[in-house]
Image 1 (spheres, rainbow, N blue to C red):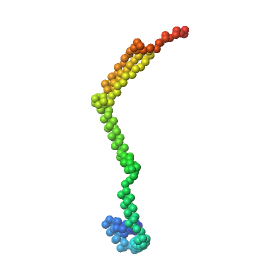
Image 2 (image 1 turned 90 degrees about the vertical axis):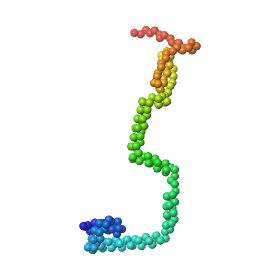
Image 3 (image 1 turned 45 degrees about the vertical axis):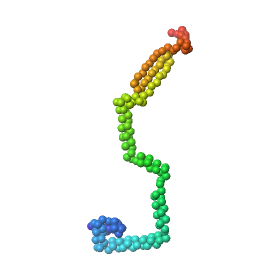
Length: 177
């Protein structure tokens, strides 16, 4: 059985027919036997009727057609491009998306690693080759590097006869030590 406090808390919902059948039957049974709760119910019904009268009299002069027309126009109006863009970005930033992004990034990274490692013909398409000439302490050196075949060739060579070499002087004799 419900107490008077619980009934008074449930009266609004009971008057609006928002209670389930069991709770509504309990409220109805309590009201038949409790004068204080019945008086509270009548007070709420009087207040409800007074509010309806005031609202109906005030709303008689309002042109609801123009209001509903404005609402319908705003619903049908397409969103500006920046709002649609933000909506797409916002969807991508939702809490569930980072988990998917990290998973996809991990799978793509592993896939790229295994393609390069186990399919050398795939990585050969992305190879680079270059020749570099260096002067290494008076000796001329050329490097040939090919990343596709993982080859490095080093040659030591002398410049052609017609090319001027920088003359190297012998270090001056020192009188030290």
